[in-house]
Image 1 (cartoon, rainbow, N blue to C red):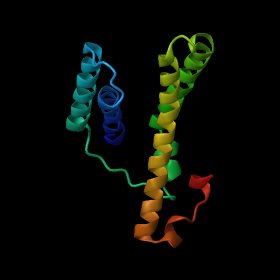
Image 2 (cartoon, rainbow, N blue to C red; image 1 turned 60 degrees about the vertical axis):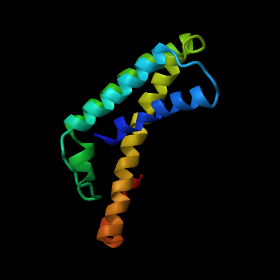
Image 3 (cartoon, helix red, strand yellow; image 1 turned 90 degrees about the vertical axis):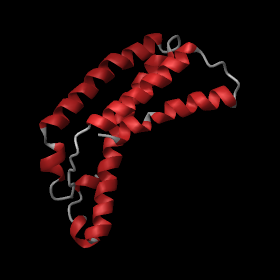
Image 4 (cartoon, rainbow, N blue to C red; image 1 turned 90 degrees about the horizontal axis):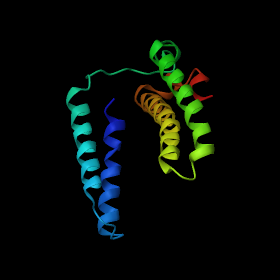
Length: 140
């Protein structure tokens, strides 16, 4: 819950790079965006629940994939793709924010998958590969 919002610090880094390296003007809009990103990161870090979900190949399906939260997430992602894809075909050349939003929706799935897979690999090295990688489903 904390890793993804902290990853948005890349936006702040991009503003710094474009201002100092590419000599682009630093506007009030840029400042407002940086401040909002930093405030968002601070709020998420301060109020994120301190929960740890142990993911293994045994409990992956029951505790992670076949849950109400995953259903809501996949439904939200499908709705966003159904809205953004036609908009990108019609307005994508004029408004870059549509492509950014489309990429963000797709990237959110890759973040979930990468986190789950890295947790499984990490658990495999800590608990023994022979016990962790018995089920092939998480890797399909």
